Image 1 (tube, rainbow, N blue to C red):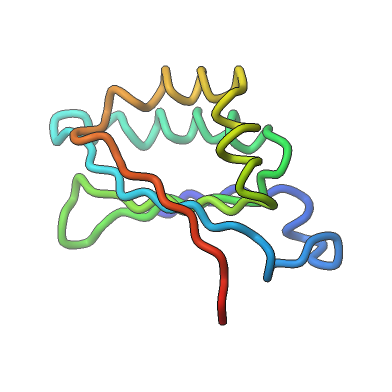
Image 2 (image 1 turned 180 degrees about the vertical axis):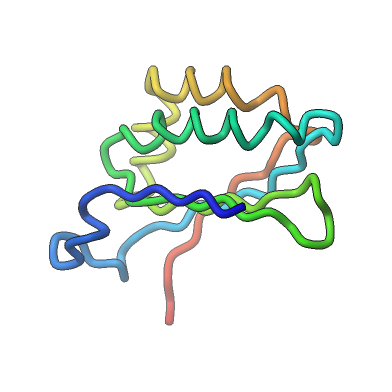
Length: 116
């Protein structure tokens, strides 16, 4: 299942240069016994991350080889929109409450910038 949310900037690319967008990545290892409820919780949590200033869009991909592994991709206008704006917000507290108990081990989050 591919879950994808976007803010209006995605529909109007002249408002933001996609070359400058920061890509956040996280491989999510969901506890096998919780896979059934994870995707529904993720859908609910998506509204919280999408509400934060600087959010562009996000996607959740299920791994074909490992049915309890997901790849989360989130695009931000600036790194600080994630590391400060989201992580220090009330929206993050709700995101955390809905999702963090699903992960084992806790995911490593990394940020990338486009080079080509």
